[in-house]
Image (cartoon, rainbow, N blue to C red; front, side, top):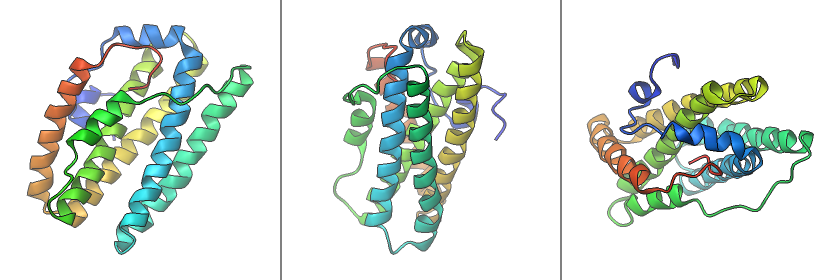
Length: 202
C-alpha cells in the first residue's frame, strides 16, 4: 500500500485528524507512548478474542494468529522506548474512541452481521491508527521518533487491509461495502465530538 498519498484517500476516512493534535502529542510524549502501548496490547487481545469466538473459521484463525504476535511485539517495542527514555508506563486510560465504536456494533441479529461488525471495527481502528502514526511520522520534531512511527504506520495499514479482506471472505462483498460506508460515516461523527487531546492515540 502506497502511503505517500493522502491517507484519507487510501483508507477511506471521512475526517482527517486535527493538525494541532501532533503538536500536542509532541509535548505529551510519555502519555502518548503509554496510550500507544495499551493500544497495541488491546489489539493483541482483541485478535485473540476473535479467534476464540470464531475458531471454526480456518482462514481467520490462520491469518490473525501472526497478528497477535506482531501486536504484542509492538507493545514490547513501545515499552522498551519508554524504559530507554526513563519514562514510566502509566495506567491504562478509558478509550472513548473505541468505546464509541463498540456502541455502533450490531448486538443482536445473525452471527454473520456480528462478525462483520467486529472485523470492520478492527479495520477502522487500524485505519485511524495508521492515519495518526502518519501524522506523527511527519510532524514530530524528533527525527528518531518520526522513523519510529513510520514503521508502525506501515504495519497498521497492512492490518487494515487484512481485516477488510477477512470480512470479504466470510460476508458478501456488497454487504461489506455498504456496511463499511456506514462505519466510515459514523466514525467521522465520533471524531467530531471527541475532545482534542495530545495524550491519546485516538
